[in-house]
Figure: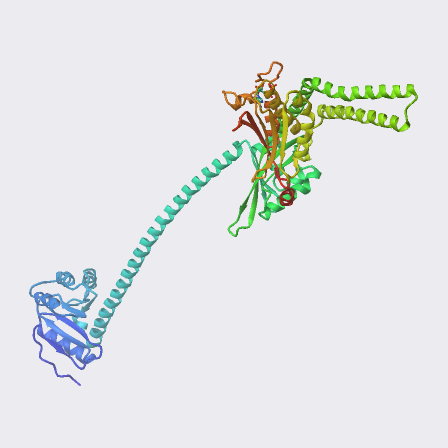
Length: 570
Ligand code: ADP
């Protein structure tokens, strides 16, 4: 059935039938007859599918492109205002998204190729532009264009994504590079820091030993290697007790170590280290622990000072001090010889006179046995008195290795008073004691401390020997200070401290006595200091001089408590 043709006007739309999927076609052709034919063909083949708008010239087509939208353009190359393939370029320029199908008068391949090269979608020879072909070509042109558009969009999207991804990768890359150089910088700083710490560790003059919490050596420094003769490589992975400790010290050192790992007391201790060559060094260790983030001990760092030489020097010095003290005691006795001789003389005279009496009684044959017994008893007691004097003198001058032992200071002072009593009497000096009760025994070298007090008392007596003061008294008092220090004060009523101040008196060889050595006070202060105490002098508030000897004294219960807490600490 042949459809009735609608009237076609230039630039007017003709709807071919009820639309399904409709394509708006711009038909650019100057010849009405040809146009009608095409519309007819389309109408017949695909009724209502194509809405055809006609433009009779290129100018009209261009202005329609501006005003309306088309899915496809069907263009004849014979236009009044343009000819040939130029029309294609201008139309594509005006509407690049609208596919162009060229309707040609020639059925030539070359023309078709040129048209396609100029941007047309297809070339259709007018002579073959029948309904089916025409509709198919238009369909294909539109669909191809859509596909192309979609492809382009997808490509654009892809390009966009690639660009975004590239930009993101560039940023990531830059950050990565920055991070790498930051890490390199940090590593450099860390390496420098490590080298610096290692240099410090190796240049310090102290032995440094690092152990893990099971006692395995993990590091030691150069000083440790030098002192012990072991190389770090020989020590790492082993324990101190298997390498450089004598068997008898192992238990004690392990106790110190376990107390460290439990973070309890015992951070300082001394022990003897056996060197690789078999020698021994005495080390004063100061220990610290390094804990992890949970507060658990991870490492024990032992820092030690080699005190072998210092200890030997100290011992030598102590030995010298004891020897000097002995000489000083002999000298004291030498100075007291007259008084001692006098004190001995009394019982000897008494013995002689009792012996004489006894003889006379025997000669007269008139004595009763009781009377002879009484006289003989007297002789015995006088002989004991004389031997007591000799015993005291011998005890005082005997040379003893200075071992420290608990001593009652009040008893010691009483001994000194007994020894110096004769000298005091000779100089009309009264010896007075104020000895506090409840003073705990102090751990000292008895002979040396006795000598200090003896020096102070004799100096006090001698200071008053030449003085004309009416009150001639030496008072020896003891008391405990609140900080567990024992104080012994010797006061006299003599001329007092010289103008130069008390320190002059303690200088070695300072003496104002014609036969003095000037060593008594200097030696006494050394003895006090060797016991952890002190000896000082000051002017007595009343008159004369006051000498104060202080010695650390711990009460027995405190000493026991401290001992049980301590694991051989200094
Ligand atoms: P020495 O008794 O051999 O002189 P010391 O070191 O014991 O040596 O005493 C040094 C000096 O200190 C004495 O010569 C004396 O001048 C002075 N001195 C010591 N004790 C007293 C005192 N109690 N009062 C005044 N001067 C004293």
